[in-house]
Length: 110
Image (cartoon, rainbow, N blue to C red):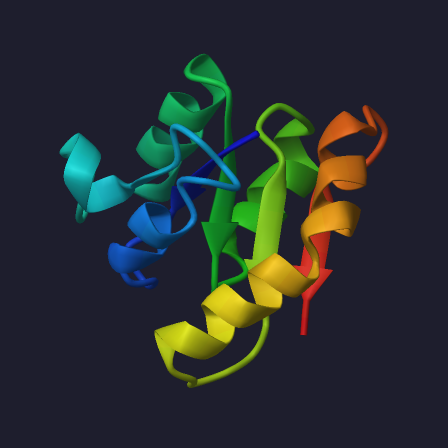
């Protein structure tokens, strides 16, 4: 599973999680910074990414369009990137199951 981090998350997260999620990227590193959500959505769909975001927009797109891509919605509020990194790692097994379940579009971390 490759993660695509939205611009509201630190670019360092993609680098820090490369061993667990090889090929993960941040929108800035792909030239998608400040892009419309629909463009990020299309890129994720075409390139087999799971979108990771802190806002509801991608979750709402999943309700309208279904999968792919899948969405991980981080609902932790304002917090340091280290906390997000720790929580994503803590949910590793559940995230792998989520990625394999064709009937589930979103995973919530709160």
